[in-house]
Length: 313
Image 1 (tube, rainbow, N blue to C red):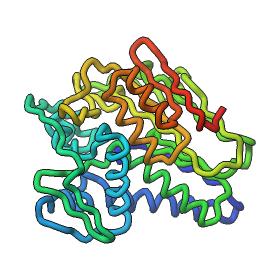
Image 2: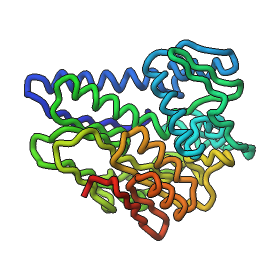
Image 3: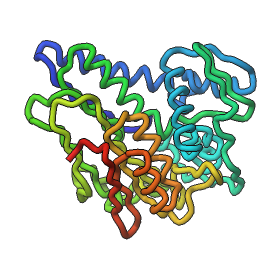
Image 4: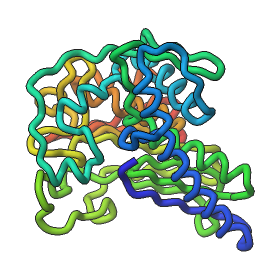
């Protein structure tokens, strides 16, 4: 997943170590299944079989592609995992650490993404049309956090926090507080990553200015806070957000950061990603109409999105 992973487990003392080990192992399993940077991953094998008919898949990959399909349908194609060829053309064809070091020269050719209309998902198999490849970005980290949180609760945890690169899922009760508090930092204050060696230290989210704090009184069922931004994974003037309608980075970088909270991690992830290619007003209206509370950040504004369904405070 090319990111840091933080897991907090609240449980009887004798169980904590075993639960943390399970969480670390599970992250590794999902990485090995969903990574587009590993040629032997289940996702890479599925992508390589595009146009070859139905392919049997395991439970984890089946769940990922099923959620991709639902998110694509719910967002009317604004979230689109078939942007993978466009990402490669933009230069993001290997793990991001390599991209930053090598300063790739993106292709000038771009075209709209094909979409998920031709993808077929049955009970235990998936069929991709020729020329269609799937990228787990924009949904994979949120879904992984959902899965790990649910599995830890089933295994005996009384409180869980899973943070995969800023995609945060919490559930239950922290032993040392009466609420979960998740900070949304202002990514505009983060030193930009440019091609070549990084100049100076990269400040952590804890050192950045705080835009908003999401608070849920415990205990709670699983809730997520997810942020998508074009300010982190950048090389030169390019970044990893692709507008599926054009196959290019969104013009003018109108929205630099989008946060969504209160729902499942996979859906918050997809929703935040989908509005990154929208006009700020349209994005705000789209989230509000779907009952998704959030925060949109442009170069000069911070725009809250209010929802009657928001149970945070």
